[in-house]
Length: 121
Image (tube, rainbow, N blue to C red; front, side):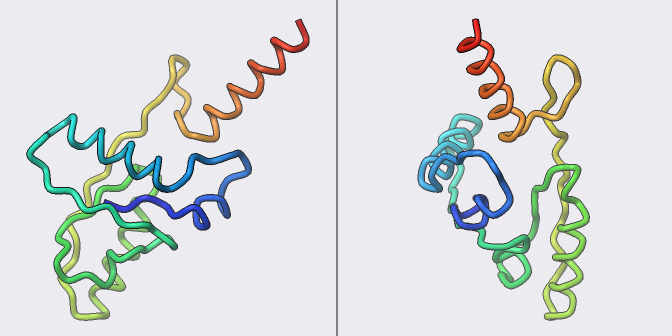
């Protein structure tokens, strides 16, 4: 399982981020909640491809609907390296009660607006 490194994640976000160790631990705990028998290895991702285009032991990749093109690009790179393509599993994005995409940016924005509204009251 890949989790964005602090450097890679902070280059793409304007809001504060939890440290890599905490984000990786959260992913691990969630996966073990879903299936305690899972054997999970979590690696930091320093770019959009991570180890997926190099590692011959990988056979699938899970991505959000919006990042499927990145998974297709990974498979092109794998083919150029003589590796088998990864099976791509696209996971639906989680939405809020209004149908808007739920993301760390949206959550931080909501928290900031809520805090600002409380301080103005």
